[in-house]
Length: 200
Image: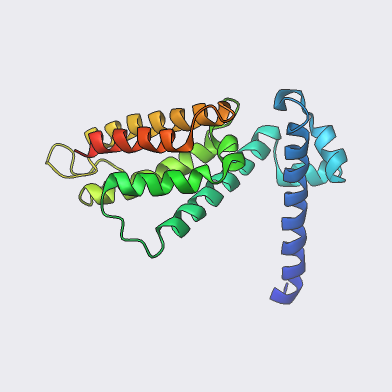
């Protein structure tokens, strides 16, 4: 039977290999469009063979999705840090804190909101944001419980939230593409106004 001591180096090796594959793909993405990258190029740069690559990822789309999830988790961790020790009461204040944390990670944001993304990172951020929002509205859940009963978190609340979330990501995407032409404070003000309007 495998011991914990024997398993630990193996786990570290697995993590290192996965990290090397991800970093190789990101390095290639900085040189040319992702659609022109091949598995063979990733393997060569990561110094792994075909069997090792496919032991970790079924294809490049799965690799891309894993990188997007990593990015989303990193942004979420930054948001948690932003919340720590702060008494944020209004939805607009919370949204600005999230916005500030996310905008401090532009490379991670690009991986989540870029046009060629798989949507996995975006879905993770959406799930986390909806959980916060529905709790703030009155404890409804993401399954639509309380819809039509005046409770927060119902189906109509979730639809309105999705429109807000997509709109905010659109503003963020414009900011990322603007190369300094859109001021950070403009983005935060736009998102704050949208949140205030929805939150009433």
